[in-house]
Length: 99
Ligand SMILES: [Zn+2]
Image 1 (tube, rainbow, N blue to C red):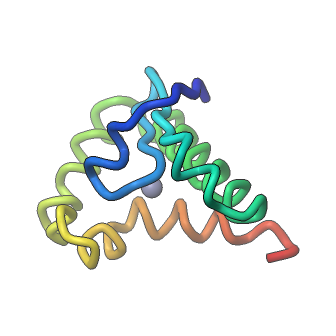
Image 2: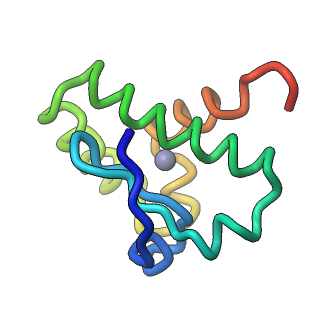
């Protein structure tokens, strides 16, 4: 996972956005406001998106994400939360035994 500081995630209401195989954009200012545990969980979440990319390959990763994004209206907060790819990443991120 390649990290780069950027304001772009903030435009979409996020702290980080992963675009494997290229980069994970992280809003450093927003990240700095988080507790270390939350930061750790976020990095696990983003790393999981890279794992999804490795598992699914480029087309299934991106076309699948776009499909779910439209199906659940991912431009809304509720739709983002319902996207199965995001649910999977959140489950993985929060399942590390001490949180
Ligand atoms: Zn995500």
